[in-house]
Length: 346
Image: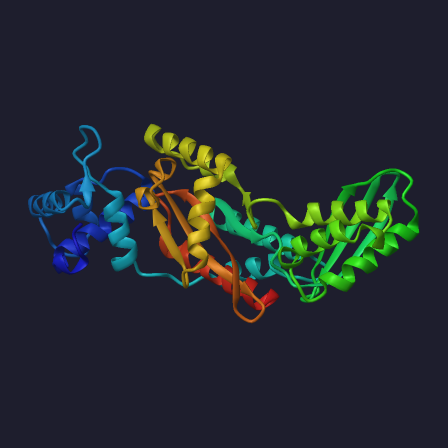
């Protein structure tokens, strides 16, 4: 692939304007329209020669029989990682993100979901967040009877976040069994994550069944099953997928969005990509086939990790949408949101 240093100043300027026009309109850019956009005096013939060189370098392509050119995925990656000038986040956008990231009276998962909605609304893309299911250090657990056969499990983390789940239990469980179940778990969960404590507690229950009566053991097991989460230790929250259909200009773009919907539905490849992003530092940008996923061809993912517990990274947040994104605006938006979440809940 062509490197940035291999392009001279004129080629960079022409290429930058082609990408800018593509982001704005999604339309192929011809030499005449490009000549009017450029602030330097270049003839259409000279521009055509530069465009031909950029096409030969794999940075541009001609869609169908159009005389205009569009950036390739490789071209977009070169632009984003080497030429793009990152803009500043508007004060109003900062305020909106701050409003959604407030933690007052909200659980950790609700903060993440609200932040994802804010990103989706501001970017007009799908907001996406990889959230930990059982990473939080626990402080207290409580079982509360709601109705026969239904019990509310309340967990409070050391950060002060409250999470609730409803479990199904055998009818006729007395309040004493719920109290005993709460006391039993509190003596073993405090200061640990559910992931750390789950197998140990289940093994202890199996070995020392006589410690708890049958109904109390059932409550404990159901609570752990609901909270421990089998399989993956993360969950994917996606909001605002409808935004992806609002600015589709061509059949090719629609096909890309359909493939993206399929990837979001199956989630496996998206989860792998986001899991890999947790180990990275700062904003990560994946464009098209860079992700090794057919479904993400023609699409882009912009994410940044967020942390808790004084810098312990537990997830990523960002947006996913078509390759034709306003990168200069969305990159600082994602970066600010991730940093704000880390500051708020860290």
